[in-house]
Picture 1 (cartoon, rainbow, N blue to C red):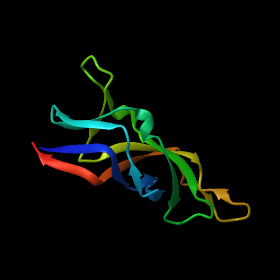
Picture 2: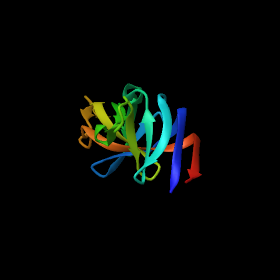
Picture 3: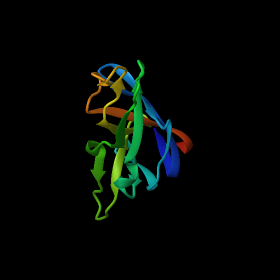
Picture 4: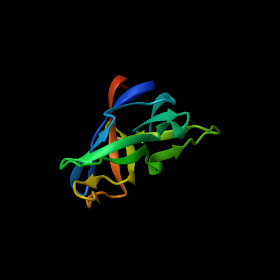
Length: 144
């Protein structure tokens, strides 16, 4: 099994979210992550610790493949269902990493608008979607 090592300030590549089977392109395409303290593998699960969950709330813009006259806005943050509390008497939080991908949620704060007069909300917009962030730079994979 490999070990995923992330250092504070690691750059991650943001993959597309999928709403109703349609891809939404999220920008910025890369994100700098702060507050990452270390790495570990527990019970066969790849995890890393974070200092502050607040560091992972990132504003983003999205469009569909169809395109919009006005892009939508949203927020990217860690899926709270993936956060584990340390079993030790510490304040550490752990994030489970599956297939070397960090699980996040994208929540829409304002919908994209379709062309028209006046512009109408994109009917494909949902309130949230799963997003996977894939390690891009400043990371190391080590066999264990």
